[in-house]
Image 1 (cartoon, helix red, strand yellow):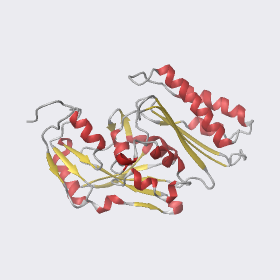
Image 2: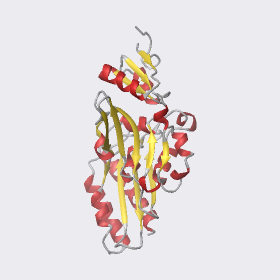
Image 3: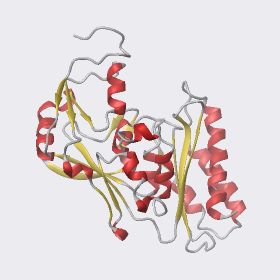
Image 4: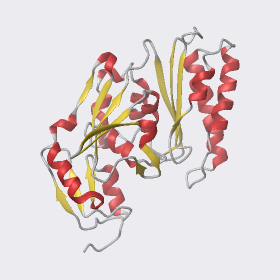
Length: 293
């Protein structure tokens, strides 16, 4: 038994470090809810110290080569393995332009030291409202690849986070990779966030636009996070920008649609009214930047 401050000590647990994916899946199938996965360990160890989670088994997956995947397959999209670190992503050339919203997001996460260990998959699987990673993944139609001893399946990012600290993963499943679809040709994307004296988002959003001056071919995607328990993509905004009305008018209408689509929450970071206001401010900034208005 551990003694001392819950913020300084870890509860007792058994540490496991499998060398293959199959071995990991077998351990998960055996221990299920009693086990937690550790890749970077940034979130997990903090939660264990605070006794928010108390696993009997901690399964370290950093040694599994299959999970270090990071490759861009052109029109087929981008694949990010579960143990790929944030700094590895920042150094990956395709993120600089093609998936810029994701790169912008990662560059604002924590600091360079923590990014040497933290992973995008870990950020997503925490499924906490104030994390940033899920939001840009929504505008790239990302899917989470889950594996178990029974096989693999893909879960759309829009369906992956079910609630606060709740995902669509079964107890014996491991999230092994994130698959992003290739964005439209010549598209631009961005990520914006607002915080208050911490790294935690009060509001964040991701947006993408292709063919901004050609309404008949214009593509706009928009997603937000940190507003409510789960991030969301606002498809009504995307339909609106296909109209031929003047862009400033469309932006005004889009902000109204965004406002109506959200149910902001109040927590220790901010009140609902403040979140709603800041979402409008950031939405206007994002639409103007991408649509040249």
